[in-house]
Image 1 (cartoon, rainbow, N blue to C red):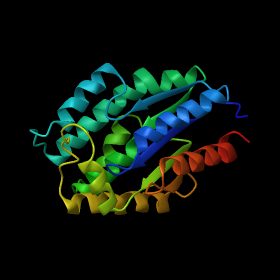
Image 2: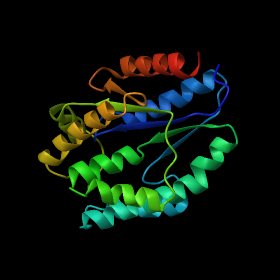
Image 3: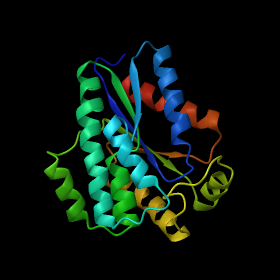
Amino acid sequence: MGSRAYFITFEGGEGAGKTTQINRLGTFLKSRGIDALTTREPGGCPEAERIRALLLDPQAAWDPLSETMLHYTARREHIRQTIAPALQRGRWVLCDRYADSTLAYQGYGLGVARRDIDALAALNGGILRPDLTIIFDLPYEVARERLKNRPGAADRYEQMDEGFHRRLRDAFLQIARDNPERCVVIDASAGEETVAGEIASLIGKRLLS
C-alpha cells in the first residue's frame, strides 16, 4: 500500500462524469483504509467558493484575463487553506479540476496567452504538482446530450458555444500528450461502472502496489 499521501486531479470537459467518479474513488480508497479528502475547483474553501459563484454566474461577462486571475486567486486560497494542510496531515487529496482546467478553459478555450497563465502561476509561488491527473475524454455530441439531461440551470461554462467545447476537448488531449508521465486519459463515454473499474485499477497499479 502507498506509504504517503497523493494528490490526484480529475480533468475534462463539461458532462464527463468527473464528480461521480471522484466520489466513487473516495469510497474505494476508504475501503482500502485510506483517508482521502475530496475537493473541487474553483472552490474548496470558503473564499474560493465565493469566487466560484462569480465565475459560474451566467449573467457575468468576464474579460478572459480577469477571469484567469480570479481562478488563480481561488486556487491560491484553496491550496493554502485546504490542499496543502491535508497533504501535510497524510491525507490523500482528490480534486475535481485544477490548473489544467485553467489552461484548457481560459487558455485554449478563451485565448488567454500561455505566458500570462504561467506568469500567474509563478506569481503564486508556483503550484502543487499533482501526482496523477485523470483526464475524462468525451466527444462533444455525447457531452451535449448529457448536459441537456442534467437537472438545474446550466452554468456559464456549460452555456458556451460548440466551438468552445470542442476546443476544450482538444486542449485536454494535448495536455495529456504533453505530460504523459502524469496524465492518463479515460474514455468517459463508457458506463459508470466501467469507468470506475478502470480508475480503481489505475490507482491500484500506480499508487497502491
